Amino acid sequence: MNSPAIDSPATQTSTPAPRKARRLAPGWFLVSPSVLLLLIWMIVPLGMTVYFSLIRYNLLYPGENDFVGLENFEYFVTDAAFLSGAGNTLLLVGSVLLISVVLGVLISALLEASEFFGRGIVRVLLISPFFIMPTVSALLWKNLIFHPVSGILAAIWQFFGAQPVDWLAHHPLFSIIMIVSWQWLPFAILILMTAMQSLDQEQKEAARLDGAGPIAIFWHLTLPHLARPIAVVVMIETIFLLSVFAEIYTTTSGGPGYESTNLAYLIYTQALLQFDVGMASAGGLIAVVIANIAAIVLIRMIGKNLTDKQ
Image (cartoon, rainbow, N blue to C red; front, top):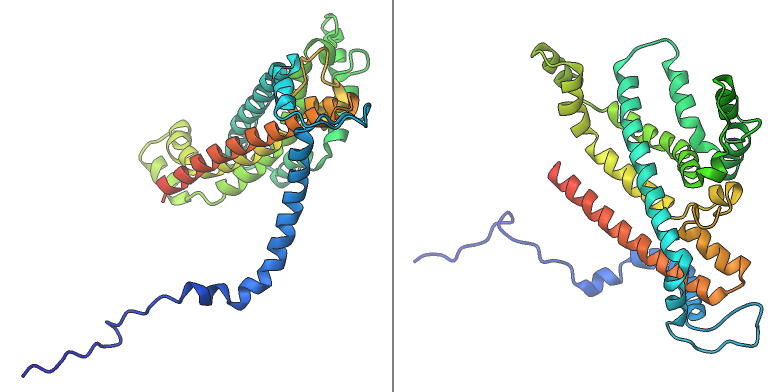
């Protein structure tokens, strides 16, 4: 007779812990106060913003708080400044990303490929603008570089016999892009320089022995190695660049007209200059939706990038 088979401990499969037992684990009770506080921190302001966006709430008319539904959203979207603000926001974000990523990759590659005295000091100087407050940075560019009388660019123009240009008046959005790019380029350099240090040097030596030049090594080894850091830089910078405000407020105040107005500054003008809290709340919700869409798209792109590189 065949004796019944006895399962060895190696063949026995452990049953998963019941879901109820995992819910009652001590870690859940330890984490729950922080999660609850975070939810309250997020839900209460969001709920108040949604409430204000659905009523007619203007500080100049405190007694008129009628329910208007989606009327504030309609007024905000159909406002003449909305299309200009949305277009300027996209142009600002795209231009700063292009400048910071391209120059960040090139500067990081040059620093990694070259050996010279004081390279550590140069690295510190390259990332130092990132630690300057946006308001201070905007004032420096406004008074020391872009000023049509006492600025550095005005002195250069006069040296060559040309008429100085009032950059903030004639090229406001370009000026804002230069200021913000100068602020965020060090962040890209910091991330990309750190990633360059993990590049396998043996592959580069093997490529050199096979006759590959500097351009071929950069294109086939360095750039693919920086795919993940570039994706991270793009995601983080996009989230922050959608809310650029201090640079515009300090230099151009959104003008002339709406030429340098983005969505963040447009919401500010609705809330604090026109005292229309309802429309400003609607604009804030629209900006939140746009930011979340951008974040979801970028996270999916980065997730696909990380999966493909495994």
